[in-house]
Length: 414
Image (cartoon, rainbow, N blue to C red):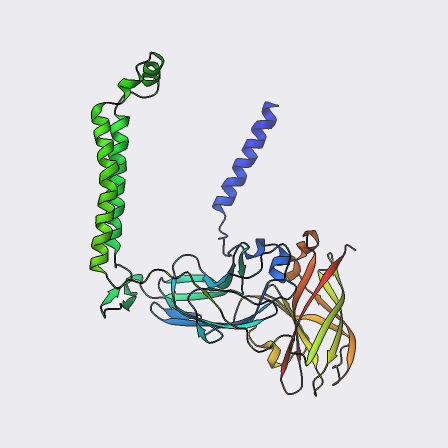
């Protein structure tokens, strides 16, 4: 038994050492750990682009894109009544200088409408040199983050060269990197010193056993001296008075102060982009072949436009499956982010275009190891085994139609 325990401890120790010494860095932000049904049926990012991915300290990069809020929102996820669009980065390597939702400046949280499409623009200023993995992502109240596609960004230069100056309401220009830093350190040191002095005042005396014996002997009144009471009273009165006086001084010194905003913006979605009515798609059945790493959608597609259309892409959870021979309208952005792209991972049966006015039953198969690599094959083990995503269809003029689809998944294990 003892030998078995020793072997187990040695094995665990070796495992920890190997993991700590492994040269592979943790490069992701946990987006693959989120349940597949949440990633596939909440926020679908598309057309995400970075203005550049090589910049110097103080240079600006603009992140643009769109996202669709799924109609088939999971019951187990709180409705998006309060959300916040942000950028995930390994620390303060950039600062956000601007953010727009549907062309409207937005600094607060906002509510999303199920089935709505939104366009975003985020301006970032490089702060720290290095190579960093950056994502747009949504924080959903009571649900957590949903990541968008990421991009590697190279920042050159020196940290000391970074400039972050803003103009205040009274016209003064301040450096946000150092403004108020000394004041913050001062307040922290004050409370650390006061707390430490109070702790030392009591710790300097005999503790635990001697004091316990005094209590047992009925001498508990001797544990607190008149001086102890005087000091405690001085702290009890002095600290609130000092804080209130400092607050009054700050109010007089900075009369034009605006508190942090806690409002909820109201931003209407764009005119229908997804499910615009010209082309519609309904999923009748979905099969997930686990060993073959393939998802087959049995779809009924209606083409209400005046041009023939062809399915060119299926996208879900930042994974894109492109049909063979997809044109430029569908190949865009395949190099802009590191989202998984299976360039010929989509097959259609029948493969020919859908004529104007035609309603066709189409078998769409998205097959690639990305299902496993992105940990989306765990969908069949979720309590909510439903798949969601976006179907992209293109006509000969290059016009693109997008349909949001969702369906329960039937697993196939052989």
